[in-house]
Picture 1 (cartoon, rainbow, N blue to C red):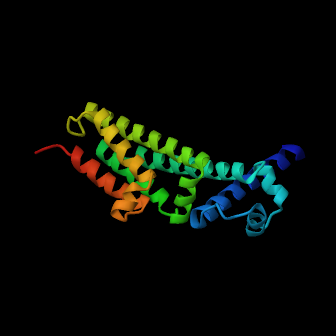
Picture 2 (cartoon, one colour):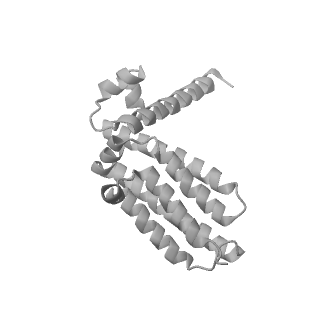
Picture 3 (cartoon, rainbow, N blue to C red):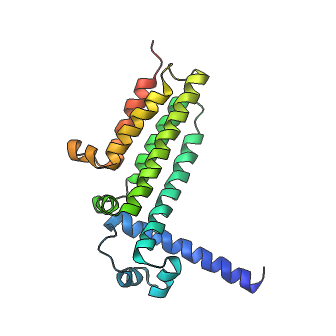
Length: 197
C-alpha cells in the first residue's frame, strides 16, 4: 500500500470514528442546540475536520442520522438472520429495532421530529422495517412456521403502529418510549402469528 493509500485509509477511518462519536452525542443529547464549535470541542477536533464530514451543520446532522440508521439496520438484519423459525426471526427483528433505539434520548427524538431531513430518514427506515416484517411474515406463512395470515395486512398494521411510534403518538398516549413500544409490538405480532392449537 502506498503512503497516499495509507493516508486515505486513515482519513476514512477517522471520519467513521467521528461520525460514530457524533452518533453517541446526538443519541444522548439531541442535536438542535449544538453549534459546530461546540461539537468540535466535544470531539476534540477542528471545525474544519467537521466541515470535511459535511458542508454545514444541517448536512452533518443528516450524515450522522444516516450513519445511526445504517448501523442499526445492519444490526437488525444480522439478528433476524440467525433464527430458523420465522416467528423467532420476526421477534429478533423487532426486538433488535427496540435495542438499537434504546440509547436514543427524548431530546434526540424531539430533534428528529423537528428537523424535516432527519425526520424523513427516520420515516424511510420505519417504512423499510415495516416492509421487512411483512416479508418475514409472508415467508413464514409460505414455510408453514406461522399460522396462515394475510401478510400484507400484517405489514400494513405493523407499518401503522411503527408510524405512530415514529410520530410520537404512542409515547404521548401510553408513556412508552420508542424502544419499549417496539418491544410491545414484537410481542403482539409474534403472539398473533402463533399457530392455533
